[in-house]
Length: 119
Image (cartoon, rainbow, N blue to C red):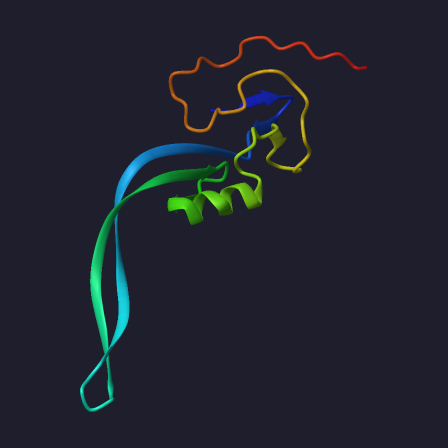
């Protein structure tokens, strides 16, 4: 749900949700050196429990980040910080109060009255 100020769609551009530990399966690759000096390429699946985060964007896109490398990417891109509200049609930053994490939050009641000053 988003606030509507004179026909404007105002939302947070993203929301970061911690998913906790999830099972992640990856493929471990290595070489085995044979007695005759040749190499054999070996692939084996490895399952680990790693921390995960879900990045929800205002237009419906979602990206999952996993492990220490995922967290470093979140910090690098600045998604670990609290987002500012934006107008989805123009992209302008809107400085108004309220909860910025309004993405798909069905239990929030719509704003009935909102008074803005012209200053």
